[in-house]
Amino acid sequence: MTATACHLELSTEERELLTGLLEQALVESRREEHRSETFAYRDFLQGRQTVLERLVARLKECAGARGRDEVQLASEGSFPASDPPAWTPIQSVGGPKRSGHPASKKQAP
Image (cartoon, rainbow, N blue to C red; front, side, top):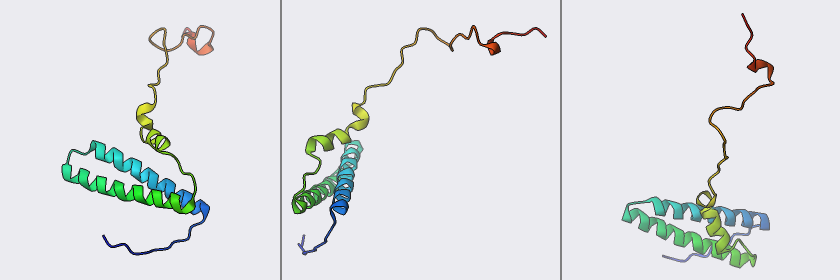
């Protein structure tokens, strides 16, 4: 790979946005790699992840800014799996009893 110098000036807001987008792409690439059953595609994704990691590191280094740490990034990557299942305890099957509600009283024809 040939290294070509490319200088890009970014505002703090632009740098933070770009860093966040790259980190999200990295998380998504790791998910995709985990789901892939094809070794060649996994190799491709791992190569892409290496490039994304380097870009994120360089952006953070250039800015001297603190970005989200590895734990935060991993936490975001596992978000759907880390949520506890939602459940509501029920005491009976069926809808609630509506004893005082006018619509629940049958009217004679």
